[in-house]
Image (tube, rainbow, N blue to C red; front, side, top):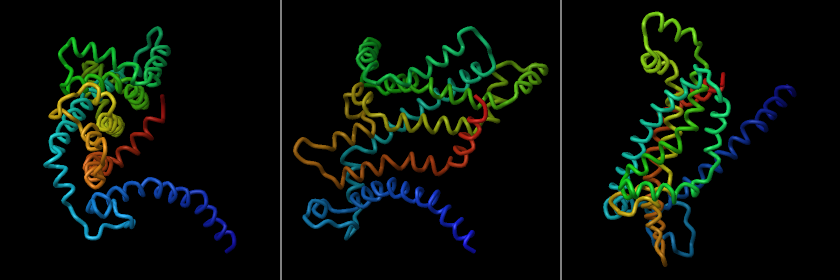
Length: 280
């Protein structure tokens, strides 16, 4: 009995308590924002702190969605994110396959350079890219964001995909080539279905990166009709006042797609991350 009790206490101390602490640390800000979004503004700025909305109201969500044009921002974010993720995923699959299957001079250096691009601050690229996109007529269009997200996120996702592809034996490729299959057919009809969990995991990380990005979007987009959700949230903060309830409601709206996405793909995500760690 003492051994069983010690085992339970050890497991609780090593696993459950840290997990509970992490869950509280993550969930408290979200629950506070949700509670704030359901309150009246006068209840938030009052001297008495109320943890639960009493009474609850959905007026903040209706006001933000309609009057603050969050329906437009939401559509813009979806358009930019999905367009970017499709291009990033296709490039990452093709590049990951090439890095996994082919040997060429300077391959290790090239992969280190790919990783090094992720260590450079975004501010370093904003002015040169702004001038380039202005010359191309892409400033204040969603395609400036799409191009930046593709360029900035493809290197890291390529390295992830290379790990997934490397976990598949090369003999599968050779057998397919004996049957007359070309490289592109092998990639998208044989390799891609096998590494589907890895593709889902990579696409999920790319989507979150595109959906949450603020600095570049704020620099390249100047018209309200092209704002994404992060920019829309920023402009809800006034110079002299902040409507906390509406700001919280806008934040909750912005959280819905990422949360729903991860709820749906979590089984693919765990399997994909585990598979990509097998062989690099």
